[in-house]
Image 1 (cartoon, helix red, strand yellow):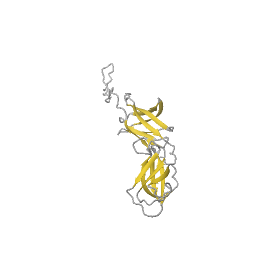
Image 2 (cartoon, one colour):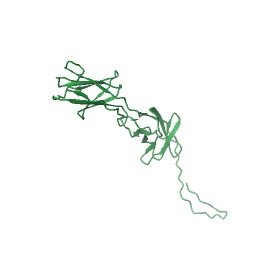
Image 3 (cartoon, helix red, strand yellow):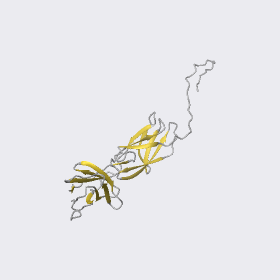
Image 4 (cartoon, helix red, strand yellow):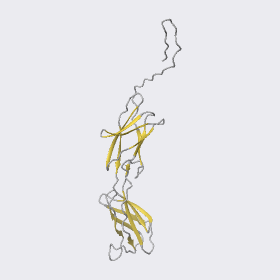
Length: 220
């Protein structure tokens, strides 16, 4: 649009600069490509040991992104020219948090809510244990003395936890604790030499929290 002014004598002013009007009645697409930082466990699973992570995603460039949990406002951000945005969330308690995210464009049109699940786990798992070796060939089936060079290690831990094993201070292998609280690591692909082998186990969870290491379990 442009305009001119005319007085009673018929004199007309210089035409104004063009004034553009944009009509936008379309709702923007819901935000997407969510992630948190730091994602301390498996990257991309949104499980973290940090209570107040940074929450990021993609939205329509120039739109305002708002984040809620159970209708409680958690924060907002402006999407940049490439649609990227990030919000430093307030401290969240341990547990599962389902956040709703919407964006509003320059015309005031709002998107539908998109949802994303964030899990906060700031407490470490309990210390695991190494219980025995298979085969323990000596008179005592739990003394760790054996004449078998290819072994399986067995122990206990919290179900679903990851067990990292070391031997004489060097990484040896991993196992997952079953639903029954038992883990096993098949080490029969490694032939042990004569001597003492000190095995240590550490448990970790999906958020990357680690337990204290077990006392060394000697195998002779």
